Image (tube, rainbow, N blue to C red; front, top):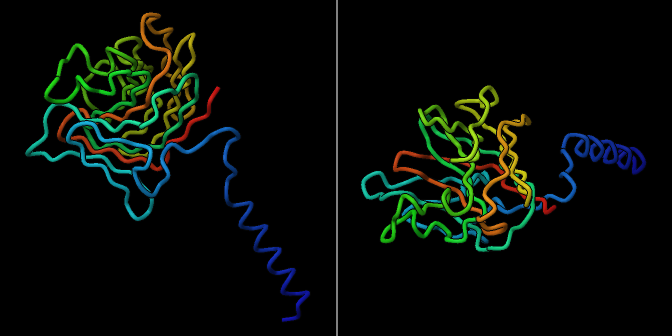
Length: 214
């Protein structure tokens, strides 16, 4: 192949690859690097690991688990932001995403467990369920607003987006607005971000977790 034809072929291949790979949304940065747990801290007895394809997995030891377990960012000062995550949750799984929890789930795990001081009572928890009978469905600002039904894809990957502002919180599930609340003015306006394993049977996976400051 001549050098001219080779150059044209390589240009064509490069253009093909570029059109198939979606560009990252402006302003979003990865909180999870798809390699390891750098920037995160396990709280409780959860088992968290990254598979060879870059998927983050959280599960529990079913024989030795106690109360809740969480995975928290080591950073504590997230203020106003859009948080977007692509996740899969096992059938009857119960999870959630915590924001502004200054306790970092201290009271959700032994030895200080107190059901009235878990992250949803100090900051806010965005509910994640697959099936289950909790009246706060997936996307709910837990304890504050019941999410609308119809947006969840059970037994499949879903995308949750949390728009956190000082004036309130909005939640989009697969692109649909499902829940919003002004929140409680007495609660913190900034804090870490956490992922919940509510009970010993819950398994959750994440392809991506990214954030855009606002």
